[in-house]
Amino acid sequence: MSVLWPAVRFTVNGEVREVHAPPMKRLLDVLREELKLTGAKEGCGEGECGSCSVRMNGELVNSCLIPVLQAEGAEIQTVEGLAANGKLHPIQEAFLQCGGAQCGICTPGMLMATAQLLAANPHPNLAEIREGLAGNLCRCTGFIRIFESVVVAATRDSASATDEGAHDAR
Amino acid sequence: MRGNAELHDLIAPGNLTAVLDLLAAEPGKWTPIAGGTELMVAFSAGRLNAPRLVSLWGIRDLRFIERREDSIAIGAGTTFLDLRKNAAIASELRLLARAASWIGSVANQSRATLGGNLVNGSPAADSSPALLAYDAEVEMISLRGRRRTLYAEFHTGYKRNVLAPDELLYAIHVPLRFARYRQYLRKVGTRRAMAIAKVALGATAMLEEEVVREIRLGAASLAPYPVRLRRTEAALIGRKPSRETADAAREVLLAEVKPIDDIRSTEPYRRRVAANLLEEFLLGLQREGRGA
Image 1 (cartoon, chains in turn blue, red):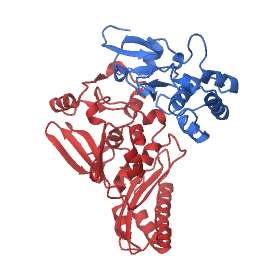
Image 2 (cartoon, chains in turn red, yellow; image 1 turned 90 degrees about the vertical axis):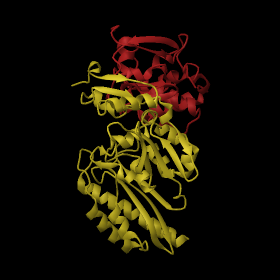
Image 3 (spheres, helix red, strand yellow; image 1 turned 120 degrees about the vertical axis):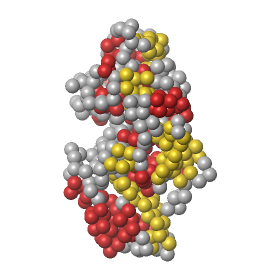
Image 4 (cartoon, chains in turn red, orange; image 1 turned 180 degrees about the horizontal axis):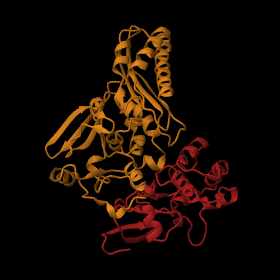
């Protein structure tokens, strides 16, 4: 971190943070390197794989494609913001129960894409689940269990809990 | 080589006038960046040739959808998610709504903008075939004023367009007069999400007494930039959609298109698929004609 760079302020998981970073530094790198939030992963670095997915101002975004300056003033939720008070989020519980995580690299992105989907559509059908998660690739190819996890998360009435931890602006 | 953030400057003046001031003061020195879904990919790969960037993200004057009397005006900074959520777009510009659903994935649609898609100028741009079929106009803005041109005349070559160095794409105006036209849009790619089009064709047509009176064909990946297939269109005017008409139109199309040959597909494959899409549209018109 260098004070030579201008300050960028935003909220991460409900907490106001200020970083000094080159304005073109990717939000993903700021989260991981400056804020030590290493849940979001870099898979492809070009917006194709979704392993860096976070929620920003109520939308799902690829944090590898966002210059940190464009996050000024934003409300950001990372996978670290899902669990609350030492208790896993229902979406996380569902992924655990259904075997929705294998090697785990894609999992934070899958969880955030699921949180985004259920926030807008608490009871998605399979086609809607597939579309909501279409930008998130699992190289273990465990998609069926991932989709099942989303179904279970939705039936657990986790929709109401989804936005509890979201700290959305909207 | 990874991109190095320290080698690029990025500023966010926050309003349209300030951005236009900057572009006028130092034309060609600043690269506008909206949602970043294109430029940040280049940045990450270390091939972003833009030392100074100016952010358009969050500028309200560029992000709007306005239903007017005979058109819908769409701000260049409107995201594809904005387009998908808009009731007027869904009901009155259904080809554009469908194209918006093709863009990448949810996380790309929340950031990628219609203006960015056009200014980037990929030959495979998802929104282009629909906008060409709808005879859309683009409006550009600079401190010198505003001007409009047909979108079909916006691209001038591979990743080249008519924007002056001090200009921004401001809005896209899509006429609503095609509501009763037959409409068609199909993209052929490797998978539904994320995949860039191998070929896409958009079309609108109006028939009178069973013959084609008006037709517009917008194509992606069939030339170095998105184009209207004007020779194929001309060959179809006054013709009755039929198997014979489709066969003849295929030949004209095959002579007209110059598909790109790249990592995603080959030129012969693209030619054949393009002809198949045109045939599908024309035979659909024929069926519709019979049913009417």
